[in-house]
Every structure is written in structure tokens, then in C-alpha cells.
Length: 340
Ligand code: UD1
Image: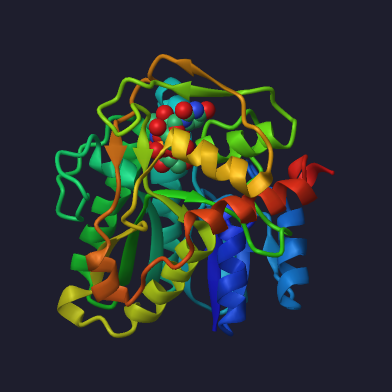
């Protein structure tokens, strides 16, 4: 009765391990360590006092996945493994299709073969493309603008087809808004391998003195202060949503054996509001300069959270202060991430 966590050594995956272990589940992690570190799993063990079996397997290796699923008698999977940098997906689309689409197809084939048919998939609000209405509901048309977003949308389609093909499947697709923050212990958190492309880890690295200043991409958007507005969600809230989704799978009827929900808070904050909140939490100044807009960015994006509340009985609980405080605690304790 073990849950396979693909990408479990990564930022969100490691937090998910903690939440699932604390809820009494057993887990096994597969990860190719492309953008993660085994040290995160040692930290998960410290937090939970449980052992976390780790298998250094790439999700494209179907045979190895089958071995792991069999050996640990898995009953389901939470599937995080994948690549997630929009710019990189534009310059190297084949590797994104390979990792995200082919990798998921192999994982699902392995699971289907062994009749393990419970799966939670990490999708992204990126599948919506530029919002035509706010807040963004799940019925908003999809239309991702990047290869990254298209790989997520393709996997969602593959999963819907799979659910329709066999009522034994139980599938949840979770569309993340902007995960930030860290576990309150400060033992696990986000540790980008290169220069961060996302806002929060960049701000944190400026605050801790690892980078000089933040570049704010655009202050001429139609938003309250001209900078981009996003729905930042605490990573622990996010993974609690996964636990709720996993628990909801059991109760799904055969003819509605698959659902898709947003995981966000429903509240948007601008880049400058994030900077100020982080300054308050860290008591550090965050110097910044204004630069032109970043390609592919939208002015404003935040979630409608009602369907998640109804479907999986979940709402985010942690506020912006907690997101900034926990990020600051993590980076102060681990200024160089896991690489110390
Ligand atoms: C980005 C990705 C999205 C992915 C998500 C999670 C893009 C266009 N989108 O979302 O597909 O699912 O990360 O990994 O890359 N900002 C700055 N300076 C920075 C970094 C960001 O001003 O150094 C601004 C951005 O312009 C945006 C906001 O901060 O307004 C949030 O950016 P980011 O954290 O990269 O998230 P998204 O762009 O929403």
C-alpha cells in the first residue's frame, strides 16, 4: 500500500512526501535528479522520522518503473517528474515532449500493465494561456502559448482519454498557479540549479545576498501598480491539495472517474507587492530595476477556487506573510540550497 511519487526529490515532490507520510501513507520516490537532490529526501526523513525509499529511475524507463511499482506494491502515483522552464521549452521543445509527454505515457503504460490505476497529475495554469476572464475557472478555454504549456495540455488530454477507456482508472489533474514558500522547519525548500527564472526564489536570493538586485519585467501592465499579478500559493497548501485529491479518488463514480481542478488561493499579488512583503518578512531591502516585459508573460492571472473547494474539500490556508516568512527561513538556513 505504497504511493509512487515521481519527481519526489524536487521542490514540490519533497513537500508532498512529508504531507503524505504524515497522513500515514507509505511512499517510494523515483527521480532522475535532473533538477533535484537526494539530500532533500534525507531532510524529509528528518522531518517525518520515517524512511523514504529512493529509486534513481528516469520516468522514461518503463521497465524500471514496472519493477519499482511491483517491488513496493504501489497502489497509485503522484506524478511530479517533468521539466518546467518556459524559455527552455521554446529553445529545446523535443526534450520537453520527451520528458513530459513520453515520460508520462511510459509511466501510465507501466501502471496500466500492473493494474495500478490511481494517479494525480501536476498540471499548470499555463495550460490556459492568456486569461480571457478573471478569476480563471477550470472551464476557461485552454490555449497554452509555450511548448511547456502544450506538454501539460497534451498530458491532460491523454489522461482524459485514458479515463474514458477504462472506468477502473481514477485520475486527478491539478492545475497549479504559482507555488512558493517552504516547509516551516526550513529543512526543505526550492533550490533552483541555475539562475532562478521564477520571482520568489530570485527575491530570496537577493535578500540573502546571493544576487545584487531583482529585475522587474515590466511596470506598464494594466494592473494596480503596473507590474504583473499572480496567484502565489504556499507549497504546503498545494501538497495538502494533492492529499485531498488522492483521498477524493476513491469516492469517484465509474462514469466520472477523472477531474481537473485549480490549486490557487484566488488572490493575486503584484511583483512590487511581493517585494514589499518579502522586505517585511526578511527585514532586508530588495533593490530592483525595471526592465521591459518578459516574452509570454500575462498581466494578471489568478484562480477561481470554488471547484477545488467543492470537489476535494480543500482551500489554501496560508497567507502571503507565511509564504515570505517560510521562504526566508529556508534560504537563511540554506543560502546555497542543498549544495552546502
Ligand atoms: C512561470 C512560467 C509558468 C510556470 C511557472 C512555474 C513563464 C512565462 N511562465 O509562471 O509557465 O508554470 O513559472 O514554474 O515563464 N518576474 C519578475 N522578475 C523575475 C521573475 C519574475 O519581474 O526575475 C515577474 C514576472 O514577470 C511575473 C511574476 O514575476 O509577472 C511571476 O513570474 P514567475 O515566478 O516566473 O511565474 P509565472 O510567469 O507566472
